[in-house]
Image (cartoon, rainbow over all chains, first blue to last red; front, side, top):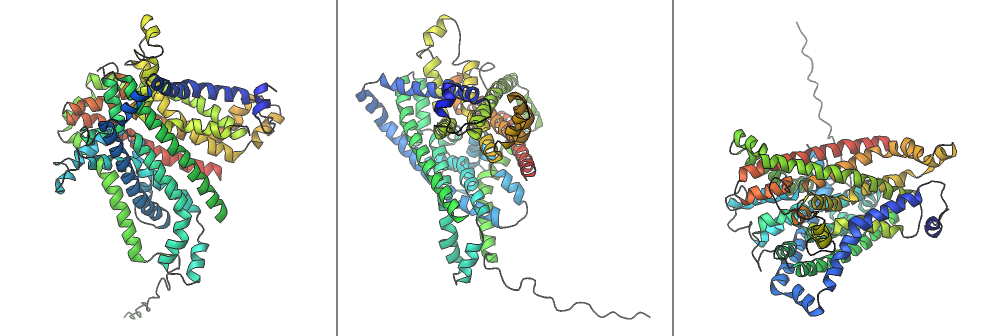
Length: 280
Length: 291
């Protein structure tokens, strides 16, 4: 047995290849992901603290944080509500074309973001299929950013809830009904609490995805500084002006935010697993 | 003379005597189905239909002209190249990572799992940026690369690297839960009966994970061909040289060649639909083989 396997393995295994597979996986991750990501942090060390603070708190940057944060939050919230309804309908009810519709839920994962971006822009522009019905502008305003973020976040809530709903035993609902609860009470006080961890996980996943989204947003946003400019676009703008340090400073802020979210999502998932384990 | 048969229409039994307590009332079902369909229609079906409508609005001639445009063809080639290089590499990584995570119990497994997922939580723009910081003109290797006349950023290698980055987790993600559920008894039996490590892998492990593997490849491919943000940062947008299909769409769109942009977009939308179709087939196979 080699040093690595003796140090790391908690239990001896007869299967070969631990060192080779772990070594390759770690080397690959280091070269492709970890070393390049660390470059972002090293680059910001070339900035003085004052310059860093100035780069990440300029008014235009703050406006982009606000837009990115609140548009992502609002999009994830809408997806939480309609994702819950969609998952419920897909698991509990029968209706025509259900399987086709179920398959299409993943469309935002499979459709390239640039395609989604130009399609949504064409739809919601003032002369578009949907835009011309509305008395206010959607495309080229913060509302347009929100529409694009709803699109790309749509599958997360549905796909996190579906497996939980499928495994949800009916007997608790039946018991609630037997004990005199109305259907509304059973749904609100028996079913919903069991779905809550998965719903929050889906919400957080949609939110995290929305924060970093670029392709589908830039077409529909109009990209006006201070109004409809998202943070990832600002990074690209700074890069195009050869302000590498400024771009990287923004990237570090976003990276820290996404790592914090990743941690939160892991905690939520652990909670969801415990909750599910308790009911089964 | 025929005898008139008595009408055989006894009073119809009510088909459902009492609603089941866990069944929602009809009006609620109708309302929720309508809401779900309206939401999906508005945010999924209409945009998808719009892509094809806008592409064909000016007729088939314009459509085909946009697709056989030399810049579009060269963008397609580059897209295929980037996907063609990134897929086998991520396949090797996915197999190695899934083997380690699923078959062994070791310290730091949770950390490894988080690291595998990391590219999912990094904005695509940042995925491009980090390679610029390393290989760009002002980057770590910028000077050395210039001295040796090697271009990575604003050239094909940068595009390939960015594509690899955004698709790292897909195959590993698909394989890990399946291989964990399958356990390693069969592999242990094969080894006990005298098979070598590689024989065990090829003859025992691989056939049992082939559908999940295929699914991972399909997802990975869809993302590789459609990636926009990361590739956009490292590409430099040189027409006919460093444009992938999504970048070609962006340029055409920004030049107000809407019909051309949407024509090329239908190719990627069709790829997305094929991906979803294959996904359904593969999921059915996984269910069949696992039961």
